Amino acid sequence: MKLNLKSKLGRVSVDGKIATLGDRVEIVPGLKIRIDGHLISVKESAEQICRVLAYYKPEGELCTRNDPEGRPTVFDRLPKLRGARWIAVGRLDVNTCGLLLFTTDGELANRLMHPSREVEREYAVRVFGQVDEDKLRQLSRGVQLEDALRPSKPSNSPAAKALTSGITSP
Image 1 (cartoon, rainbow, N blue to C red):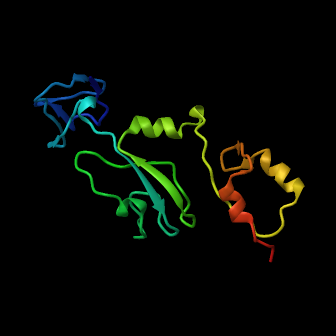
Image 2: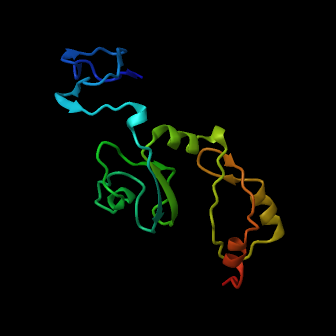
Image 3: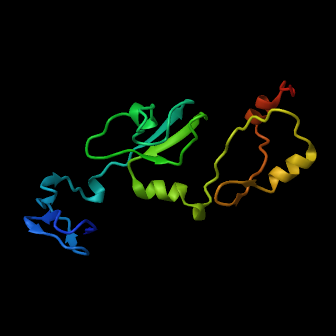
């Protein structure tokens, strides 16, 4: 396995020698990589365990590692890991709740999140007021998000029907 070193010059050493930008290193047993003098644990891919965690995010938690305002984050509640770190597969707004996936495998996270993979996501959205047929047709053509018009399709699942049954407009 090759490791492409991309770091600030002079901060990374490999077996005692300062690495330069673009150096490639073969990962072998006993290899010592240090960043700013701190020994870094390097494992072969086969040694790394891919973990996946399903987490229910309640309202009020942020999908970030650290919040300068000290608000709770999803990472505060996740199990602590040694030699790995959790990567969020997507995110939810602070005032929403729902299922989030976390993994220790960056490639898996990318495959699940990248638009080219077309991994379908399902969101339950509560609408206050009446939604007529014209509005449903408009929504089925897509939803405008910050970056682009994203495709959408109304759900016919039993869960979606249960959410809408008995709801009346104010």
